[in-house]
Length: 281
Image 1 (cartoon, one colour):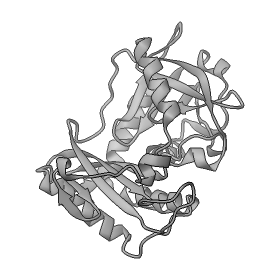
Image 2 (tube, helix red, strand yellow):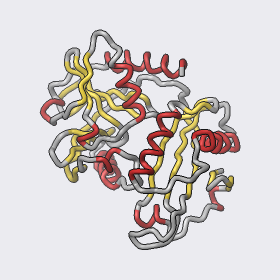
Image 3 (cartoon, rainbow, N blue to C red):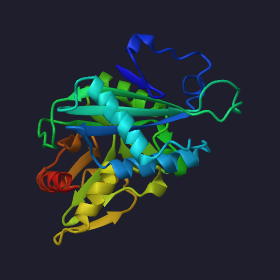
Image 4 (cartoon, helix red, strand yellow):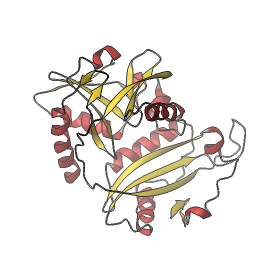
């Protein structure tokens, strides 16, 4: 069952027309949420990122789009799918309705909520082999639009196909300045000695909610220094550790990049602190 503008429907009953702007122009954005026992992880951060993203896209935010209203709609959708006492992945999609060419003809806003069951309630470390490579066919643009979760994800799609064809678990994306910005499904962190580095938003990386949580955790660690600074491809093979982040997986260690193997010590430490933060929030 899905939630379309507040109405619960069977998935087969949902009709998206050819004039839908999200379908036609990618004029849409989304949030991916992890919900456990009807508690949305980091909901405030997701909500404020969503509001900021809608403003960047010049969407007119409906008056009813309060934090409480959207939370209720998410929990309602989880409940009708029998997942109120389980872990769930939620996609909250926002589009600008129907009609018009590039210029919208209305200020309508549609929303939809789709849920899937997840196995893990809290975050764990997966140390199975996880090999990545650079995806160099196309480059991301530095700047504000690259930092938000719009439905324009063609580079991520092409990178995923490249990874599948070459038996990689993931790929690293570059911007037009040839700096490493992120992976296909999340942010990137690099560990060298006692320094933990992640690309800055100015390089075009996603303004990830999990990225924000880890930055807050790392800045409180006495033994490590956090840097938000550009990462060149040459730094990857000199790193002690690489890991990726998103709100569904939490932290995913990268074990191999080309001929280099990496440790997972810092990722393991951070997962423990992340779960403590989740429990206390």
